[in-house]
Image (cartoon, rainbow, N blue to C red; front, side, top):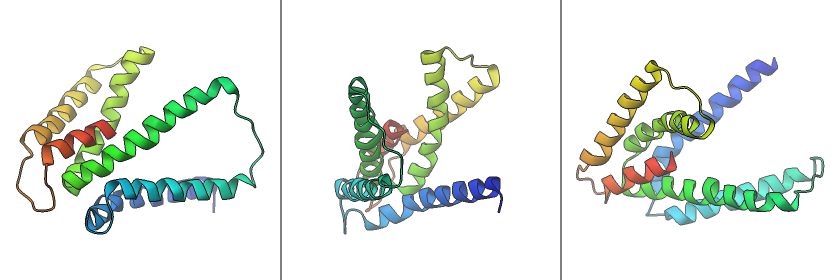
Length: 163
């Protein structure tokens, strides 16, 4: 099997797991586990896996000046990002989470414009406007009544924070 095929299969597997996560996580929350418990399991599981693999990897020392950045990235990448998604899923629906997670590329394009001064062409602007209109429509008007979704607008807002 070529490296390209292996990479495609790995990406397909990761995407499948990520897609199933919306429905499976919603099915077990909050009856069997809370959003915060879910995050604890994920973090502990990842810690164990990375720690186990670390014995096989070359040893590298993190420079003292980089520790602040590592802590900031862990706060935003692990704590805020995952908690926003799982708490949002607890409050909203799997369909809304799957739709609103598609705003991530839109946010990346907008941030790249402000942070690294990347040009945004007219086709990207049209895509951004359409995507944000759909996300805002869901957030502002997505207040259907469901027993398993106690606060859909707040959940949708947390999905956008996650994105």
